[in-house]
Length: 179
Image 1 (cartoon, rainbow, N blue to C red):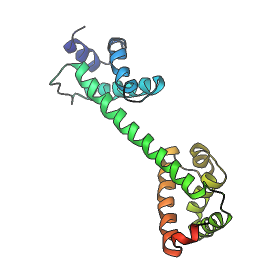
Image 2: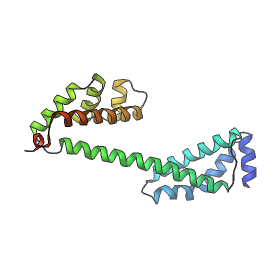
Image 3: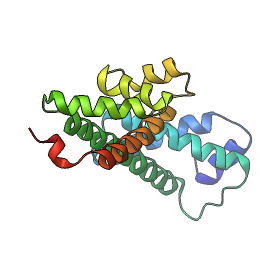
Image 4: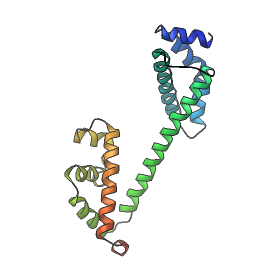
């Protein structure tokens, strides 16, 4: 099937065109993610998301292709994986930050942190306590606090942690954290 025929079929809502694209480009598109630090499932997810983006643009009539469909899909996959990889890297850094806070068993350090957490607003207090002290997942925190999804919970945790960092820095010096 030629690119022009694929676009015509998508414009008519023919989902067989989507199946064709999936089968034809699966290996190449998933290779992008796998060769850049992703796993098989992540590669599948990224490719499926890329196909959805492509389908929506093609079906809307707003897509003007200046290259082959495979090239366009490739760039979508690259961009989606780059964003996901950056998000994952950010989460790894946050996990390391939490280890810095609570990594060494300093009772005084934990008491200082708990005091500062208690001074935060109710939602921040709950988010940080659930995550850092109770070890709850972001999914559970989102559910417990009635957030729309885990991304909302992650964003809230990030903002609350920044507030906590600022509060700790304003009230305590590094020497308060040395054993």
